[in-house]
Amino acid sequence: MAKKHIYFNHDGGVDDLVSLFLLLKMDNVELTGVSVIPADCYLEPAVFASRKIIDRFGSGGLDVAESNSRGKNPFPKDWRMHAFYVDALPILNESGKIITPVAEKPAHLHMIDAIRNTPEKTTLLFTGPLTDLARALDEAPDIEEKIERLVWMGGTFREAGNVHEPEHDGTAEWNVFWDPEAAARVWETNIEIDLVALESTNQVPLTLDVRERWAKERKHIGVDFLGQCYAMVPPLVHFSTNSTYYLWDVLTTAFIGKSDLVKVQTINSVVHTDGPSQGRTVETPDGRPVNVVYDVNRDAFFDYMTELAKQV
Ligand code: AGV
Ligand code: CA
Image (tube, rainbow, N blue to C red):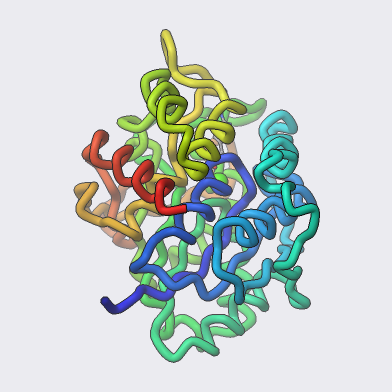
């Protein structure tokens, strides 16, 4: 089987870190690099957790790059704390040592090297803001032709986003809102973009039945890890609130490993970079095309991620 070459840039949330774990378990994926941007996380615990996940569940050969990018609109502190909880899980600290090193270069330069040093084209998986990609493209425009595609969790084409902040109208999704200019920069390129937007993830909230399933199957160490991680964040019970957790990034990652879990449609769009709608992605006939996931086989998705977790 020809493996896909994946470079993964994430922002240390529970679902970002679970995504890293699952990528390491996909037999059709070769990870060529991992980097962490301090958007929906604090950098230090997110990098520690990433290195420990690679140690525990990977097969070596990777380092983890730290991003020095800064966003325009910071994430809420409560959410950024999640990386500390994952980093502290006993299963990641059993060995008492960390082997996977921190890369010498910052994330955007690390990614340029990884793309240039991989003979095949690289698929980029981004589950946080696009800042490091925008910077890499400015620094090394030559990498564009070696990018197979960008698979990104970001945006929404509905009225209601998930940003509920002063001076904003609520139409944006957080990964765009953190750095709208970066998304707009990537929109200017000819890179093929597959988008998991908020409407794509509405069918995969964290629910109690999913938690129960992972609890029942916790004899598998990887399934127990899923259960421990998703014990940290609030599920959908009666109605969706601002803190309700969806499997945003995990769906995006599953799309890489098994694209027939979802249906995709092409939408032409632009990114708003200023004012009360900053970070909003809007459909417009003369906008740039993106392939948006609009339907998910929910049961097959949860089966897939749970089976991957049993591969430990
Ligand atoms: O907007 C979704 C993005 C995803 O990349 N993140 C979380 C996922 O990693 C931001 C976010 C939105 N709502 C959240 C978020 C919440 N309730 N808790 C934590 N992060
Ligand atoms: Ca994320």
